[in-house]
Image 1: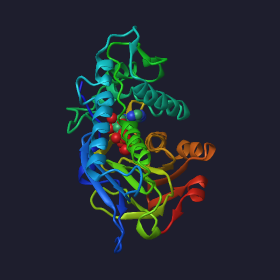
Image 2: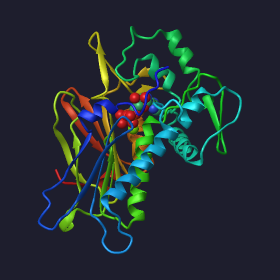
Image 3: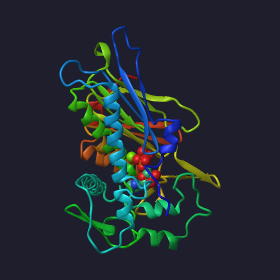
Image 4: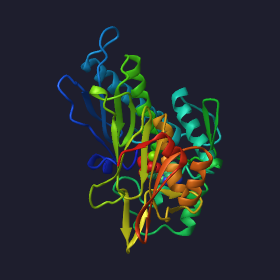
Length: 346
Ligand code: ADP
Ligand code: MG
């Protein structure tokens, strides 16, 4: 099995799904920027230093952020062969495998979102992802056979494992849990917590396109976020928005896909059919208080598709922007909660 880490990341190095327009800072405006690499992609933290008590030097803060990311990777990356998650994936079925409270809490959140989305967000979908060749840079030699897909499907979904307290019990040796869909979001939240613990309240934290914002830029300017148009050939802006003290995540099938015989295969899998999603919903952006929630929900909604995705967003008051690709071009649908919570600038 390919040990895929937080997939899609290679695409994101070249192109972030969400761009921030860092406006021209004026004279005494001093945004500090810390950049680095993590989870197979890049991260960026921008903040206004707090002065006085409890302040911290950029170097010290950089070290803390880096250390925290290394810790999280050592727990949840499937790219690191001795990470906690990799050891869980290697563990035999039918016995309790104890994990950290931290990893358990992320799995718990994923299971909650899975239930909310009627199983469409599925962190055990890995065996199917793999058959379709969405390990990094891989393509299947040919389309997987129905038999292969059925066999992989038997390893996925709610039946694949249970979380009891902080222990996981797999139902089959080959069950493979992949936290790609929410681990970046989780890490963004954790970095934000570090900043806040040093009284930094004006910041932007971003890992591979998952982003969380707080406060303002210098001179009381809002952080402005650009949502990209869902096209793979070039970069263009669909919307610019202000989201307040919230996180934002976009899930799309327009960067990470391949084409075979003119057909497009997305890296997002419909667990019910074991096929890559095939509907006309090409991108979903979610704004939520936590980055983990925004990250997971964006993936859940796009996999659900235009009708059920919109229904769920309305029913659960999720602030979501859907972009569909129709005969007349791109069409946009914004949930009621999105219009209420988000200021659309353009
Ligand atoms: P996006 O930001 O486009 O949602 P992510 O990197 O967050 O992308 O998650 C996509 C990855 O999650 C895929 O590459 C695949 O490994 C995995 N995945 C695919 N389908 C599903 C699904 N239905 N539920 C959970 N994870 C999935
Ligand atoms: Mg996601």
